[in-house]
Length: 281
Ligand SMILES: N[C@@H](CCC[C@H](N)C(=O)O)C(=O)O
Image 1: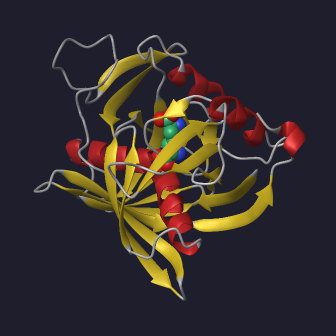
Image 2 (image 1 turned 90 degrees about the vertical axis):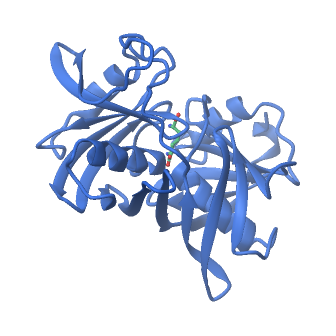
């Protein structure tokens, strides 16, 4: 089975061309290939499939085999894959995801995609699946107790669920300890992605992320969008911001008039490879 490993700001996935390869059990394969010692090593698996409603479909799995509705860094890499490997020659494409169809604009240099701008769609402020809230309530600075300490969380769904937590010091945060406690908190029966954020100025924030199903990653595109929305709602930043992640910067804009969030960032190929027959699932 042929694959391509790609990364967007260090958020790395194994990509499989679903036009050619047929995968019997993608969730199981995601767990095997993501293993950084016994597999290829990645934050998860992404299948690029035919679609009847868009140019392509993105089918995304986290490292633990769970399904993600959307993946911001992943969808930029899908765009690079389909253009660079000759599946399409347009620089404006559509991709079907579990959270709807996304529209992407590709920047091409020397016949290769170097950057992608994604219309990530409308942020949902009504939190999905947070039992502590009454019907219709939004999650803006709502208290939550985690590991014996009270935090204030802002919940934003970018197709997948996120909570944003502000902190003065994210560098020394013990994310391996606190991340799973948010992810598996009783408030989130479907688990959650958590962004720990320090606001630097009105146009710049830095964040670390604990992703549902993958743990700490170097970047999260949907997470960066959720952070931008939360910061605007909290009066902390302008609508256009740079989000500094461990793997590099993303440029996020919440366009009020269109009520959509744009994410712009890079996408890179790491290597092509072949998964050995005897390991197939
Ligand atoms: N890294 C992604 C998000 C991947 C899915 C997430 N872990 C979930 O389960 O919702 C991104 O760049 O958006």
